[in-house]
Image (cartoon, rainbow, N blue to C red; front, side, top):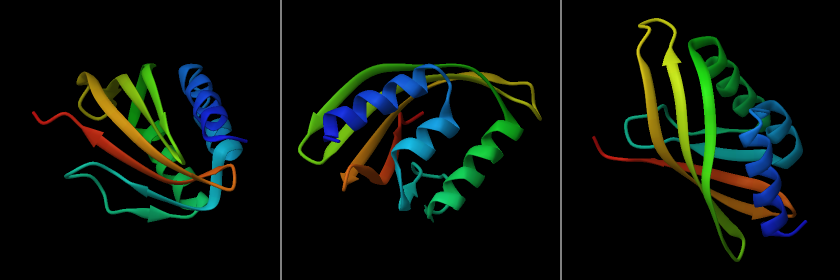
Length: 119
C-alpha cells in the first residue's frame, strides 16, 4: 500500500469511529506513539497502542471524530482532527483540534505523533 492509500484508509475508519479496526489494519507491530506536550510518555508496540485506546474508551465518551483534512508527503501524512468527547469522571465536554503525523514503513504506520493547539 502507498502512503496515500494508508492515509485514506485510516481517515475513513477514524470517521466511522472504528479505532480498533484502524489500528489492527494499518499499524505496524512495533509502532511508536508520541502524544502532545503534557501527555503521557511515548508507548511502543501494538499491544501498548491497543491498551492506550482501551484507556481512552473507558475514560471518555467520544461523540464524534471529524477528519478535517489529510496531507501526504513521501512516507509521511498528517490528519487534522476535531474530536468531540466528554470526560466520564468530570462530565466535562470538549471539542479539541489535533494533528496526527504518521510515518509509513512497509505499508504500515511505524510512528504516530500528536500535536494539539496551545491553550
